[in-house]
Amino acid sequence: MVLRDRTGIVQCVFNKTDIPLGETCVAVTGTVVSAKKAPGGLELQAQSLDVIAPALEPAPIEIPKEDWLVNPDTLLEYRHVSLRGVKARATMKVKAELVKAFRGYLDGQDFTEIYSPKLVAAGAEGGANLFEVDYYGQRAYLAQSPQLYKQIMVAVYERVYETAPVYRAEQSHTSRHLSEYLSLDVEFGFIEDDNDVMAMQEALTKDMMKHVAESCQAELELMGASLPNTEVSYPRLPLLEARELIEARYGHKTGGKDLDPEAERLLSQWAKEEHDSDFCFVTHYPQEARPFYTYPTEDGLTRGLDLIFRGVEITSGGQRIHDYQMLLAELAKRKMNPEDFKGYLEVFKYGMPPHGGFAIGAERITALLLGIQNVRFARAFPRDGSRLQP
Image (cartoon, rainbow, N blue to C red):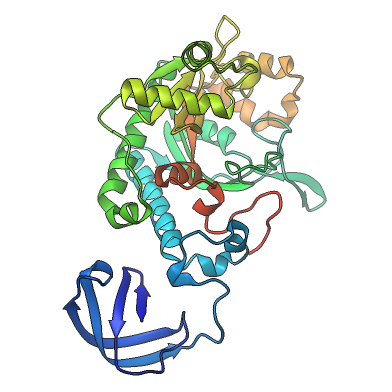
């Protein structure tokens, strides 16, 4: 019989023949002895077994052998049970430690944690991908980002962060997208330009990886995860140069205002081959590809940037506009109503330092670190275009 608790699993041997049904909650007393073939090299020779809470029927999936070989939809349908599996538990533990490291590093850099509202009157990025809510007869939305509140709070604390769920009415129902996910947001003032934003991201993500390497050795080994090299610098490429490199080196053409998934994968391949880095920054996105608050450059580009990790974008950010008139001009250019952002805009009338920031998708960075192909399995209870339970 295999026993499981918060520390892991152990093989238990006893003489009784009436073994309880799987997932029964028990208390066992016995002697721990060495056993080379047992999990962890130890087994428990039981002397007594007390049933605390019996399993009333067989579980819908076989938890001890849960190896994600079951149909993924079945695992998600019974997520309330499949979370007990060793890989699911390991994944949630690694994510928790990544978030813990995120907080710890920023606390050490004199950041203050904030708590922004999740019921808002307008989206941070305009009207796209918003969940509408009836708020006492008024139209409201679930927050797709704490962005505007982060910027407001820069004028209060200078350096702020938030760890909270955000909501996106995603039209892309892929293995990379969720309708609800944990966003790790950062914003800080008195920067020179977007290089300061990239430097902060690099230092933070390296610290997160080092922390997980120390605190989750068993989980990483169980998942067969390889850790990124934290001793090398992350390469930085403007979007145009990245496209040219991908076409010249790999023969893949990518157009539009962003990199397509294959281009992101190939750029990561280049970063690994040439710099031994699992991370790569892409910078200088066009203005039409970025929200209105992104700092523009004279050539029609922006100081907006993404961080790509193992072929997938995990952060988006950059330098923000800190000038009131520039913000009004950007809103007018995009035919957006300033009244929808009244409180946010007023802050910039009273002095705002140059600032910037970024947001990390906790589920994405967890999935990519652990080699999980579907980001849904990096969230305990995922929400997407077709799933509202459990």
